[in-house]
Amino acid sequence: MNIVYGSYDDRQGVSVWQPKRAKTYPEFWPDSVNVRVLLDASYVESGAPRHLVVTWALPKESHGGEFTCHACGVLIGVILFAKEQNDWRVEASDLQFAEYGEYGAPPHIYLQPIGPDRFGLMMTESESYQGENGAAVRIIVPRNGRFLEAFSMPVAYTLDPETWNDAGCLKLTKPAEACVDYDGGVDFAPGPQPQYYDLLVTKRVYRTSSTAIRSGTTVSRFYFNGSKYVSAAAN
Image 1 (cartoon, helix red, strand yellow):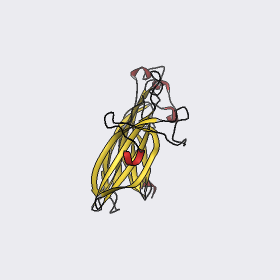
Image 2: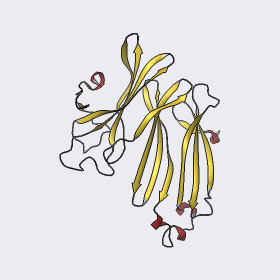
Image 3: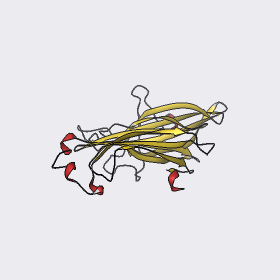
């Protein structure tokens, strides 16, 4: 944290930092934020020790709910350290990668093998709003000295029971207006590429108001094209 942010309070586990006024920095935030470590994962890639550090930042509130509302995310930073001889150097860094999360709290992020000798980050997010409940998965990949959001897709969606009644879903007839409840997940599996696994996305539709969108389970395969995961069905 000292290397990247310039200061770190061991007792509080916080660095006070002044980000740039960039696209990923919320306009209504003040000039300084408190930065904390969300993930510090060590691994070996291509024979070299590495640390993948994820941070989350939020301004100090002057009153309750100022930066912790339902739609309030946090600023996520990502830093990759590589060890050379006895020293650690920054191999890739994006301290203002994106704003994720809600209620002023970060999403769940963990280290994910994305190949036999490759690692990235898996992020899972949940969201609820006016009777709608969903979950999504994102995959962040270090590539050529920078970080890429290589994949993002909803993996679950449900509506509150009150919506499934004669005044709601059961009156919809057009496929584009259909109410659909589904769940699913993602897995990695070996594919034709030697360095990166393919991504398998499972979707199970268990309730639908439309005959055009039927109940059942599907599995879609995606492959990494060097910058993102794209559908294998398109080829």
